[in-house]
Image 1 (cartoon, rainbow, N blue to C red):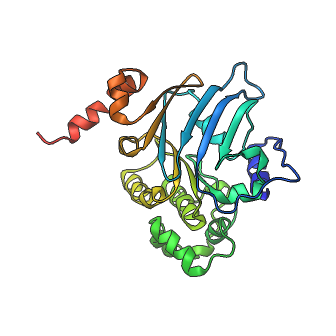
Image 2: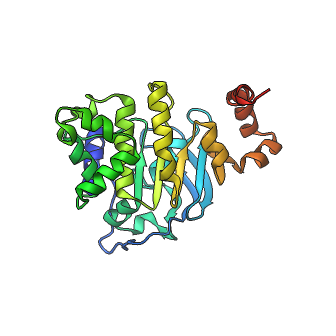
Image 3: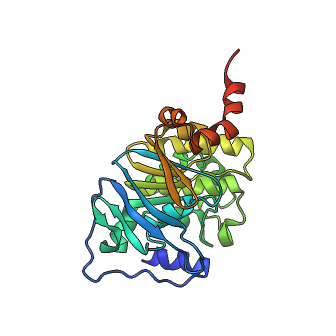
Length: 280
């Protein structure tokens, strides 16, 4: 609950998420995620951000969410960890309506990496250990190495005891992303929510982040707002959003054959890149 409190304070939003006093604990999640006829409208919105959205992700699957700006991709990823609750329908984790789970036990099962990486005004060590306070020094360093950020941290005068500043302003965008990835690796959640970065990264940072993300998808359910073709092609299921509705879902080849929104997005954004990468 403390994590949610800090996040909402940071966003300057009131905490309106109620926790049931007799909420169920989910200590060993399998990672099955289901949206069941979910409709959601933001408090200040004049129309639903999501309309009757239904899908199911099996444990261990990678789901890529794609769609134009304003399609509802971020809203989908905000409802699973209960940043908001839907007005209609249910969001389920392992069959439980997330509103019936304790926030603490659910929070242990979900790890998040967003484009606007949230780092506390604290040391790198404290930011990493927030995910797993009881972690050993060796576990923390192993997570940082897996995220390709350890060498950079060691190059700092204060190393892991370097204060990152408010919102991590002393670090570059790529460095903050890798600290956030290390934090999730250390946490080792059953469900990963990821918003792939699309800008403000140099080519080296982009490459390091891509390499660091590979182990994150292994052995866990991953819900990714996908901007990279490699992620989309690797997905077990692609969820195509448009104007708050889930208009298509399936795998890459099947969706191309449907010749719908996904096919148009693919031809517009990725086809040229594929042709350039294909040997003559």
